Amino acid sequence: MKLSIITVTYNAEKTLERTLKSVQGQTYHSLEHLIVDGASRDGTVELIRKYADERGDLQNGEDEKQKIRWISEPDHGLYDAMNKAIGMASGDYLCFLNAGDTFFAPDSVEKMMHSFDPQEQPDILYGETAIVNDKGSFLHMRRLRAPKRLTWQSFKQGMLVCHQAFVVKRELVEPYDLSYRFSSDFDWCIRMMKKTSSIHNTHLVLINYLNEGMTTANRKASLKERYHIMAKYYGDLSTFFHHIWFVIRAILK
Image 1 (cartoon, rainbow, N blue to C red):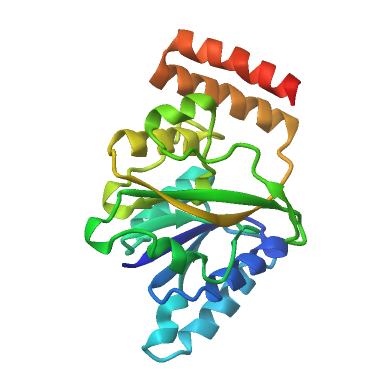
Image 2: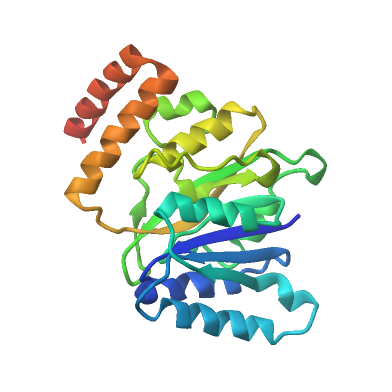
């Protein structure tokens, strides 16, 4: 089974190399790294080209496991770039890894892909996420923990699984809804879960997620979008009362 790892970049020169090295260092043999860059103006493209050229010099065989395919062109934002990458993917499963994010360990992909019976391939795989600083050092586990059993109803409690630790079978995948600028991944995960009951908990920490501070304006816009997404799937009344609980939970913590 092949895994397509998707990284979307824009002016990511300072954080991308850590991600490239993490993918390159995976012990799993069947993967591709797809990078969709939004016409960066810093050294991002040169960095991508360097790693892609190094992999391109290799002969066919085991080392092709880290093959990089990439494009750099203007886009209409993060989710438009992700949709482009979905169209490029050839793997059985898709995983999204931001610039600055890494896999938890060199054998994370191998453990994940061997965590289920290959004769009964689940549609969705998921796991836990660790939060790291800009040097890649561990800070803490993600505040919202992945539930033992995940369904589309689980996200009534918020995005319990980080997007990067949410791996979907390619044949199930649909494009991201571009009407959402900041939270289309939340909508996308719910849609993917609604399509299937074949969701597998790997019981693994899969991802080191870079703790980037979102601007206050973007955070407010993102939360507003999430509220509307939750109301769409779970109803206005349920969403209202769950948000009252979110406030109480935040105060208690």
